[in-house]
Length: 431
Image (cartoon, rainbow, N blue to C red; front, side, top):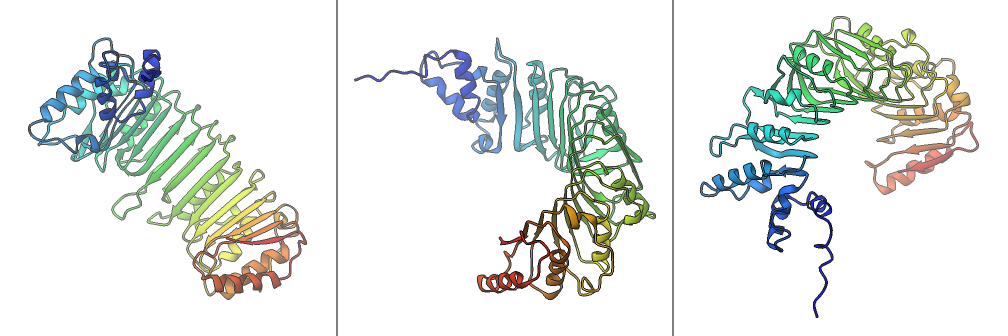
């Protein structure tokens, strides 16, 4: 009894869409199913070459592979490409195989590709990409992972429809990057992941359409931090920044900011406190803030009131006077509802003798406190006691104890339940 082939009767464009979800090797294998399937793989809209595809290459079949790629990208009557991706370390300068990666990129651009995602290693000091890549009007998403190489941006740049630009593990030159960003007029998502910022006096990001900004730079001893970060992004919703404190910050027009994740460290800035304060002042309209610092980098007396802030997450190493600094900061966030703390309590902490006015957020708005990596020592109990004594409307106290044994957790939980609470509705939760 013959079973009906219901898949093959589907229209070609649907079959090609299905094939786009398969690894390219598996998509090609479907050509033996029937005459209808013979050339369908050549019309898929997503082409990805990865290390698994190259793992079986030998000196005998490498030329066949190159010819196959050329035919796939330059096939007659080819459809436009949604995505062209080189992942898992395809080599740019591979002396054994001599791949024409530049030619592949150009062929994808000729097919009106919308997304290019390149993970390239063995590049040498400088990565020179085809100039046409930086003037492609079909490109909407560009992701580059250059594995420690410097990305060269040509003088002629115009990416009029680019909405997402992500650079990872790359060396970025200040002038080149400023030129690239300023010529992406509809950019919405800009990200630098683990990048090395070189030769920069100013990083200038003035993009009205920008919604997501991630600046995650390598903090290394031989790198200079004497640059000024300029941001003017009225529609920015999310901002992540990781670096040593720079020479200066000019953040303006951040009225749409919903969430900020800031990790800053003292390195060699001569006026670290002023610069760090300007950075925090620039995000004062944010609703949710995660802050990581390794010491007191800015004075709370110079901060504005964060009227919109309802979630605050604080990370960092222990330093003397942190409890005073934290309470002072809480005075700047009168409408805070959720507080998350993740830090070591140093021996000099003096929560018991903290003679300061109680922040208004503790009295009227704070509903949830989460304390991560609780060690069960006396100083941490003192900190918890401070919050339980003063948080009048607290509904939930969550304590993370993953480093403690079950017996220790039970003991600590019992001790926490014995602590007096100003809020009768407060529940203690262990996780």
